[in-house]
Amino acid sequence: MRFEAVAAGLRDLDYCPLTSRAVGRLLYELALEPGVDEVLELGFAHGTSAAYIAAALDEKGSGHLTTIDRPKALEHRPNVEELLESLDLRRWVTPVVATSYNWELMRMVEQATRDRETRPCLSLCFIDGAHSWETDGLAFVLVDRLLRPGSWIVFDDVKWTFASSPSLRESARVAAMPEEERVEQQVRKVVDLLVRTTPGYEVQLLGNLALAFKGARGAPQFQHFPEVAAAFLRESLLRGVLR
Image (cartoon, rainbow, N blue to C red; front, side, top):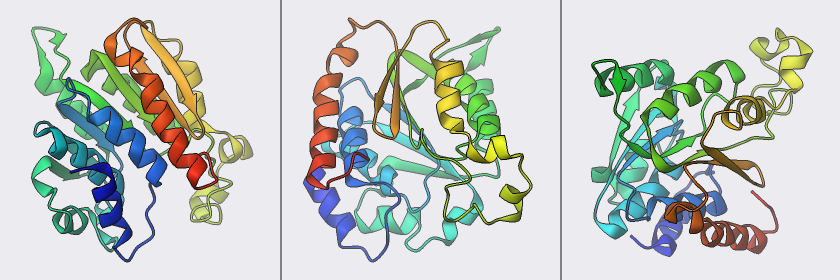
């Protein structure tokens, strides 16, 4: 499915997407790459970002997306199942409902490990879930075990904080946090302290996103990145916000 077609289909649905068209464009372009087959998403909410990724897989006629979120995500209207069905993209996606996506990642690592060696199976990952150091720090470590060389991890909300979240800042959970945890950009900490310090990663920042490439700058997938970034920036500028 062409990008404009999936964007139009999402626009026709009566809901407020949590993934912008610009971020969707970036995910679409990355997923459209010929070598991208097994894709993982952590945090699906309504399923907007899953739809953009699935549309790219549909457009090239190959690949699969596994997307994981908590049971509460199914209370969204539309939920991930309804949204994908409405766009005829359900066949490209396996939604997994779990209380912990790190537990599901543990299972994936376990399945990929034989004779004390983990065989990488993922070619793209989008992390847009807990936004916390505690959860997403471990998520990166586990995803790194599963990610093939020459692949991207996209982190959303690198500037996000618990203190600035309209839906969480007044919650009892956030009120009980030390101030440092409430105001810290925790995804940015994961990127700066774990991803950048892991050998073999190149990190690019785009607005509120961080893109981590596992491999050398000379790899074809890395060389194509300026075109992907340009598409994201065009979508952002058209809407007057770099998001």
